[in-house]
Length: 112
Image 1 (cartoon, rainbow, N blue to C red):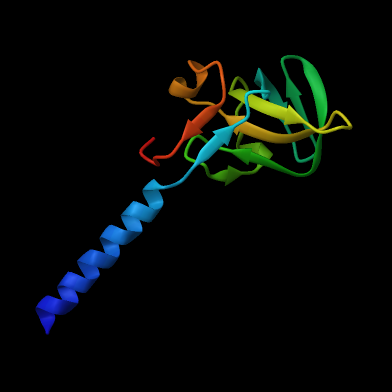
Image 2: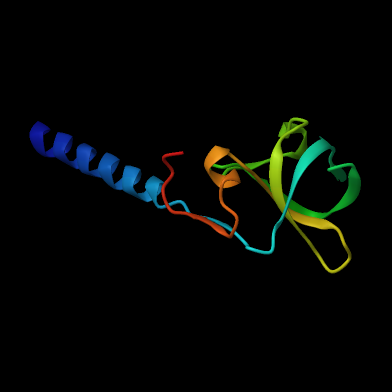
């Protein structure tokens, strides 16, 4: 009985780890590149240019976690997209391997 419970717990942990590894991070090829000067709840300044944040703007880390704008340190390299009104609607915080990529970033493992 105890062995089967241990085996079930081990299997559940393995399945959870596999599900966590399947996190996907897709950055569009059209996403602009820049360096954040500052970010607040409603504005972001990238490479000296100020942008309004569109409602629902997401800031996504290299581990595919969503963070708030105050999490973004000045000097952070990002890729971002603008909506039809010129407002930033998505921001991806870049890590070293993302910065080396010139096209779209597609990552399917959470090991980073």
